Length: 133
Image (cartoon, rainbow, N blue to C red; front, top):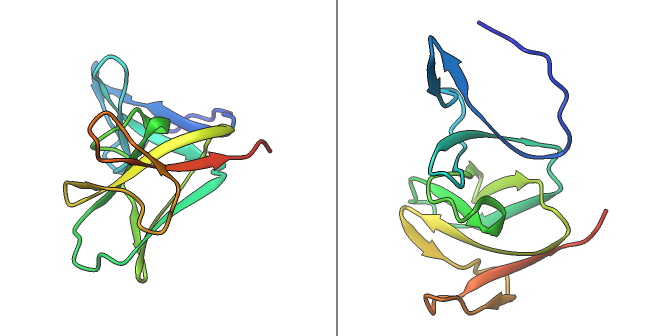
């Protein structure tokens, strides 16, 4: 395999590999994000500072976290099943973040979070406030 030593700061970082002139996402990383130009990139989360958890949904095949912090990516931020919960640790900048979970293609607000606000689809978004470090 190939390796590159590189120093990065805390955050959610998008990347791709160039293999024989072709740009590809990381085949060993299921976390993806679509950038502002419509390109799908792999994502590396370095030094996460908040963990999202969705309890239950034992029959779900896939749960995705989507929000203002990842441009509402429908295919990215795949959560991991841990016991009776779905979990994912991310790096968030200080301030307000809107988010939802996508459970097998169905968008839902966080049932454990009473903070939410209406959105343009009249379906509501959950709210999380990240405090400055």
